[in-house]
Image 1 (cartoon, helix red, strand yellow):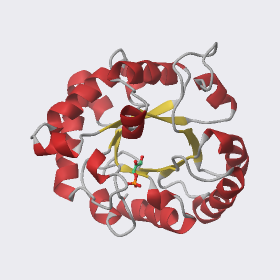
Image 2 (cartoon, helix red, strand yellow):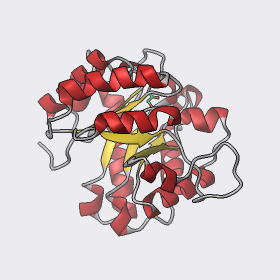
Image 3 (spheres, protein in one colour):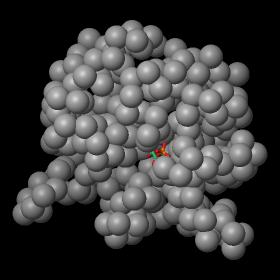
Image 4 (tube, protein in one colour):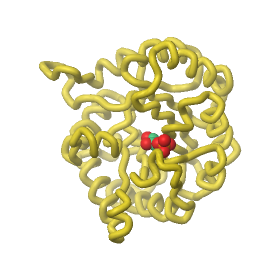
Length: 256
Ligand code: 13P
């Protein structure tokens, strides 16, 4: 039993046309759109934010984006800003996902600028950290997570900190079907909680939700969600079908 409300977030990545997104969100809203036991966020591609926002009206499911630029506007072809996301009623934004770090060259410093911009615009960052397989095998997991966490949260003040959501996503577990064991995940989550306690006051660190991400499915979710410092999940593959996503939300309700 913890005072932190569990959170299940779906990262749809580069999937779903606008029409497909509307169908998926309709199924989610129908099944879990009224419950308030856990927080639920869906993060469609930018092209579906507006239609998904409309479908979420009147429900308890919240809207998130998958990335944004740190500037509010200007000559940044192809980019999207925090005020634009707010204009579409987004409340959350995934930042620093390992796919953005690996394929789009996002650095800790760039991610930090985005985290600060999101908070300034009342968007809750779902800030991702996690080690690669090579880093885990080299025994560097905690060091890597510490570096990413401290760099990404630089300049975040005590008042803002409890709005941040952290997602621990071991890169080797993303889309691979290889889920971290509950012990591996809980160890890193507890370590992150400890770091947050050093960076911010203990009561604030106690409020921050730390999600697990990486091949989380209805079959492995109950055990992961039962861990003391695992406050929910950031779901990729299993968020692309209403049925499995809803099962994950129900697993979080059962674990609350
Ligand atoms: P999978 O659930 O497909 O492993 O993806 C996890 C993830 O990257 C969520 O952001």
